[in-house]
Image 1 (cartoon, rainbow, N blue to C red):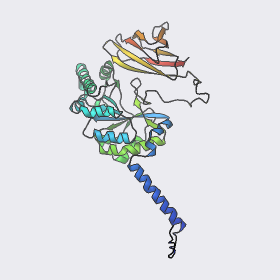
Image 2 (image 1 turned 90 degrees about the horizontal axis):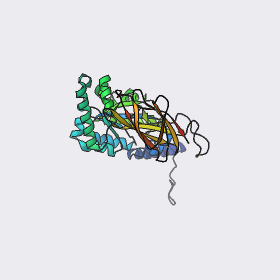
Image 3 (image 1 turned 135 degrees about the vertical axis):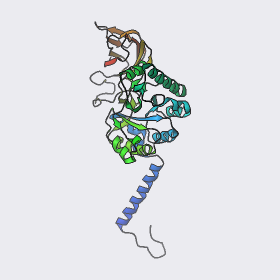
Image 4 (image 1 turned 45 degrees about the vertical axis):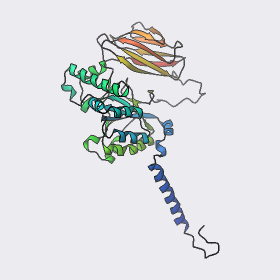
Length: 351
């Protein structure tokens, strides 16, 4: 390939030089692919390797940089939870809507990031309600999660949040991006994330945006994937709300349910009022099932739908069996003065 047919032959480069040249060409191609967002580690197919989920969260949005943040998250196939400030949503509803359109989850971070533990109960109620309304008006989504500003909370604030159907979520890992952390420091802090945990980051910080590809590379290398934060547990779970598997998948026929039950039940709380709330339970992994649910005294289940219920002698443990109405059932619970507790799923059995 280096010779002219009729002219003098050019000397061929040594084998080592040819090998180095090929490597350089491959490296250049790899850089070009990465620059166009085609990094293999970030493709949706990597989801198949997930053996745990983490919650990536961004506070204080929406900001003037929300669009840039969403672009980076989409490029790296990340879904994250955006803890939005109510007055920011009111001032920039299109940015809040863009978060939902990009596949993000939107949540409540108070109206104006005040020190809420210094408020009265009625002030807390007004603050969180106003923020919920602004987010729902802008996005069509009613928040189910609340993060108190500065992580400051007390029993009154938790009770108010719960009465509005909001699960309080703090964080396990602080990226320190708010404290001027460099890209490498943010990446290092994020590397401490373990399955189920949540990290604090912020909208509007360039170093945070620049750290996201490296954060994802580290998570992918450990089999961890971005997930949603469960409204019932406050921990990171799969984006569809199911917890990650705790045991290896069964080796038998695909139609054989796995040992120990063969289904998963996940509870959410779509409606909360002052004296009662609704629970919606979705079952996955079986078309016929039995789910055992327990409520905390003195709460009582008053109404059920889409299943056949029965109770133990205490009246606090309900067994719900499928009745052909699908894989989602629900019930209303009267709080009877205990507004903070929520039902616990004790088991899900296929068949």
